[in-house]
Amino acid sequence: MTAHLSVIDWSVIIIYFASVVFVGFRASRKARSHIDEYLVAGRSITLPVFVATLVSTWYGGILGVGEFSYRYGISNWFIFGVPYYLFAIIFAIFLAPRVHDAKLHTIPDKLRETFGDRTANMGAFLTLFIVTPAPYVLMIGILVEMMFGWSLTASVIFTTVVSVAYLYAGGLHSDVRTNSVEFIMMYIGFSVILPYCYIHYGGLSFIESHVPPGHLTLTGGNSWQYIIAWFFIASLTLVDPVFHQRCYAAKSGKVARNGILVSTLFWLFFDFMTSTTGLYARAILPHLSQPVMSYPALAEVVLPSFVKGLFYVGMLASIMASLESLTFVSAVTIGKDLLFRLLHGDPNRADAGKKTMRYSQIGIFVTAVISVVLALLIPSVIQIWYDLGTVFIPGLLIPLMTSYFPRLQVPSRYTFLSMTFGWVTSLLWLLTGFFEGASTRGGYLLNMQPMYPGLLLSLVFYLFGLARRQRMVAATSAQVSEAHAEVDGDDSV
Image (cartoon, rainbow, N blue to C red):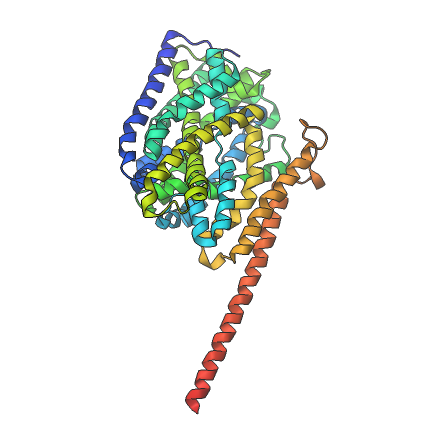
């Protein structure tokens, strides 16, 4: 598919790119003074900026949302909306103030503080896969391919370089400031297309009569086991490094908590717009060969010049916000938690600030290369989300959650085993789906989605550790009681 953009459309798009680059490099001036400024924006993010950066960052899969809405209708909202709202609210109430008060930089920092180096290093490895920007690299590459007519490889490489250039200089300051621009544009973009669809084609009655009946059901024809697996994948919210990083950077625990709650309302509204747009795409263009292009294809049919440019900017802004933020989190994990620690030891010591910053900048380059390779190897946004989430969440979920609640913590050996067996089991289970051929995903072992056995085994090792801790506490209590009894006996003598 090729986009047909007028001079006015191109002007809107160019002004948007220029604005983002200007804001990104302008914000970089603050980032050079201290490592906290570079990694967590000086822990000074206020509520409006917190909401803008979190909302835009957490909604970057816009072409994947369009693909799923086109294929399965309102189940897009049920699968990619409802569970994420639930886990976001849980995070806000139970975790956000605790994460902020920890005053750390990354998830591996917290794992190291609680469970030691071995668990933290494994956590850094898992974090890298969870935050890979590969799906967003793929999506923005597809858009640029369509707009410019380049090859997908050239489009992916070009857009990745442009999207993360200012992160090298500005760190999180540049990230959150550009996110604020992107937040505004993504809402403008999707607010302009729905009125044109309604005026030219009609409202709910038109959609009902032109989409398959299953598109207006919660499941969309998918199995409940598949849907429940996506609900578990939504638990990524609890271990999502971007959520944790924003809470570390918030001005206060109250800002972190309230920011997530307010963000949930914005996500609800944006989900309404994107799901409705997807239904219109299916109703108006029922025979698309590439459902991932449903939003751009709809824009070609219903939008005039200038408005079409705004809509394309809305899609670009949504993707770029996630691409920037995930690239930066991944870069910090590679540079600070892996490379620096491997070569120089503790990156949090007082004299490590400038070196940590330089290694994080190296991490930006490494992240970009890995993401481009993954995007070209797995050319499906939904599949990248599913595979990475279903494999790596089981390893990180229980260890990270318990790290913030001392009463739930178990000895570090059991935490490490819970983490390791969680993700390895899910990975092996996922691979059973490829036994029928290198590129064909068959049925999984025991007809079970890969996330379930991974979570189960992770829970089993955690429960072993919990039982071990309880025995240790009981033994300590008995020793204390015996000591008190001996003292009492000596006193009576």
